[in-house]
Image: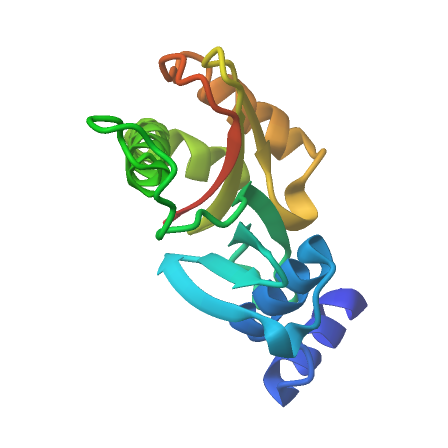
Length: 184
C-alpha cells in the first residue's frame, strides 16, 4: 500500500514523467554510437522512431510506459547512395530496392498487429488492466515469441498472455524483427 501511495505521489508531482521521443533519441544514439545532437529523428508510427546519423540508420520501438519508457532496436540499415551510376542498363538501381524491403517489413508487422488486436480481450483479461504493451519478436522463418513490456515481464500474467496468443501466426518473411504493440 505504501508503495502505491509513493508511486501515486511521484506521478502526481510530475517527477516520473518521461518523454518517449527523448528516450528514443538517446537509445538510438547509443545503438548508433553517435552523439544525440547529430541524429535526425522522425516518428514513423505509434511509439516507433527512425534515427539517422553518423553513417547509419536505426528504427526503435518504445513501450508506452509513463514511468520509464524503454526503446528497442527494430531494424537498422546502411545508407544507400542514390546517385550511384555503376549498374548495367535494365538493372534496378540499388536505391530502388530499399522500398520493397521496408514494405515487406511493414506488411509483416501489420499482420502481427492484426493478430494481436484479434486477441485483445484475452490479453487484457490476463493482465487485468485497460492496456498492455506486448512485445513480439519474429524470426525469418515466421516463428513468433511473445512477452510483456515493463513490470509484467516474467510475471504469471505474461504466461497467461503467451498462452492466450498461442495460435497467432505470421508467414515466413525472410527477415527478423521486433514489434511492440499497445493493446487498449
